[in-house]
Image 1 (spheres, rainbow, N blue to C red):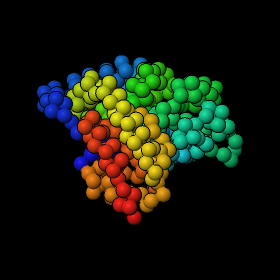
Image 2 (cartoon, rainbow, N blue to C red):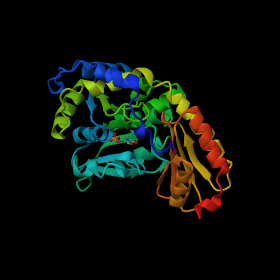
Image 3 (cartoon, rainbow, N blue to C red):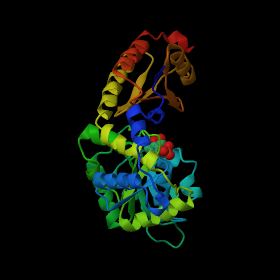
Image 4 (tube, rainbow, N blue to C red):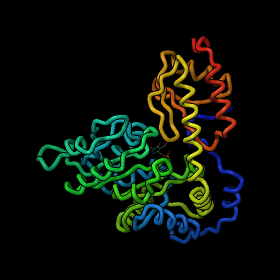
Length: 336
Ligand SMILES: Cc1ncc(COP(=O)(O)O)c(C=O)c1O
């Protein structure tokens, strides 16, 4: 099967597993896991922030900043398609009490002037804005760095915190050549995921100031995320950061080839094709399209009626060629 469902399906390789086997461990709740501490130091080096904390998932990495800087009854400005709005079971509302306010956006990319228009200052009967959230990449699309810096400047003018969900920030970075450190300057805190395109089995990293991370440790504990000998997993994260960033370019090249093949059919209209993701529309019921491809050995998912293809290390050059052949040979009668 050619697995184009998500980069979250990636599995640790043998070399990564060896690094996990050999990891030195200690009690991380007491800050004594040496491998975890090495991963933290690496994150600090990559993001240029003062400190970092490793959290169990991207969702936890998004929730903690809302617990610290969002606040109950306060507003976070974000796009309608953001992960915190669509895919986190309302956690920022139910657990941190922060209200998402939707800023108009084009496929998740907000304009700085639209963000500014949505800021609420003090009024006796209105909730106040406390935070802005950006997601980079968002549906595979890369935020222009100038837009991010403009949003940060607006946030500073209004004393607002900026959280960047950088689950796939390395995809943005390898594509544009802009370092993660540069992107991180546009936010007060940034998360990135190790368990998606980078291929580790778990973990996200949250980086920010020392004071923020001190608070983040308390929030992680509240959420049940204080773990003990997790150097085993941290070793996979270190391996991922040392070996799997540059190769994301292969996923992007495969995405471009598959996207071209799709756009040449008369049954698919590609609506987004960027970094490692393709979104396409079709006039056929998407579940029939998915099922027809599954019968031919190719898996992908949908968001609503939009087909979604995600490239990752699960897909080799040969798989890409086979996927293109399956797409070209597909008879739309199979979708009826
Ligand atoms: C943009 C984005 N942010 C956050 C997350 C959450 O990550 P996790 O599944 O590790 O909680 C995801 C998951 O796919 C994501 O795509």
